[in-house]
Length: 323
Image 1 (tube, rainbow, N blue to C red):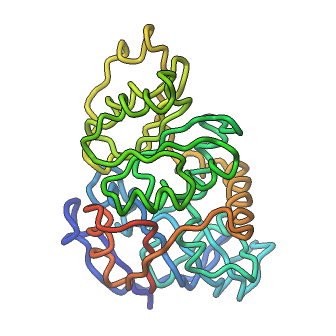
Image 2 (spheres, rainbow, N blue to C red; image 1 turned 60 degrees about the vertical axis):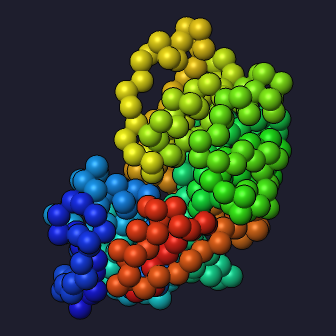
């Protein structure tokens, strides 16, 4: 019998409840997975709030690490006992066990700890999408990363800086500024109400950054438009501070000549080839020590606490659940 966390109805963390469920045998093309570490992401909060619909089982979560416990018919390339990671649909990672399409499973090298992968896998895939697919970041590129001390922010900062890019990060406190600098930010802007555009202008001699990544939302996206050079890209990747106000197309151009991207890592991961390429690069980067992010563990039964801490900004780095 599997232990799951399910959503009673869209709303606050109090709507998450622990329950037990019987799993059917894995179907054709599926595996049974005993999960060992489950990543907690902002998208899980959006699922809980009803911004993204959940399947009928109402179990949130999009990534985990675990061990293959059983194989369905026509599964090849996997064996019982294999350690794997996965990310993407079908949603339902907040569980001690689950059935999963075999094509989602990515075998893990023996030297990688479950917790390290759960802390960085889907965030790493998101970073890979942003740095390679949305806007190719290379040596000499200047980027702006909001929430640079967060889980995704740390990975973006570290990976981009290793590539040779100049990273300007924003954070909410001096303590978080130290974390952003430690992972490779060349410059850090401190304060949620800081004048990002003025600070970026000073740091870039008035040019602006080539690309900016905003997972904060709220009023931050509008401010971010003023941080980017003409023909640069603003990637809106979340709304942790609340809904994003409507943007008039005239805010983008022609005077500013900006490009606004609203990429979905779920859509990226639904492309099997793109998913495999990103997963391979992420696991190689973790193995090589390029992608490292601190992780905080919670029990599966404390999923509501983990989401509450993430939502309130009480944490740095990544969060994961132990079944």
